Length: 178
Image (tube, rainbow, N blue to C red; front, side, top):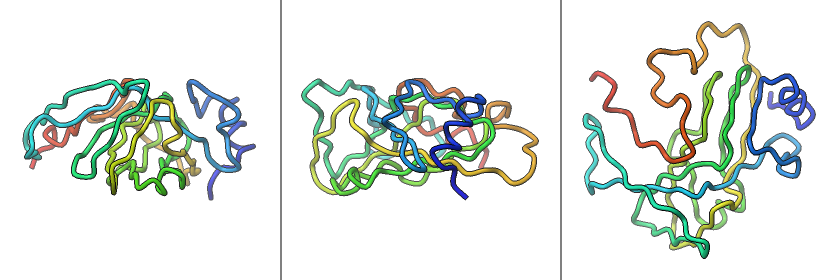
């Protein structure tokens, strides 16, 4: 079951869902539209290593936009800071974004109960496309949780992406032991 617009508003009122900045016009019948933040990043190295800390270089999207290239991989960030304390948030691309050939996540569309932060986007594209800061990029949907949560994400000692800032965060795979 997905929360409806009315239920999302009720949860915002209760404080179990937080979206900043919030704009009522971005609330759909069962989702909330999020926007591309102004900061993006690319990995410094051409070959990434899952066991090492792969560093990224940040850049700002200019006023006249930035052209994404199909052979590159980008990290973006949502303009919106969110908190979800009683539901499972999912971030999906908007159909208009997909119709431009833009994928906003490689695998990480699901958040955890207790996630607090801006969402890092894993952006790739099918052909060159110009993007702009503040453009609609995705939508959040919320699922109720069956049963009681023992440890929320923002309370886990091992949470690698808690309290993400308003800039993209690189992979923290290297913090795992394998």
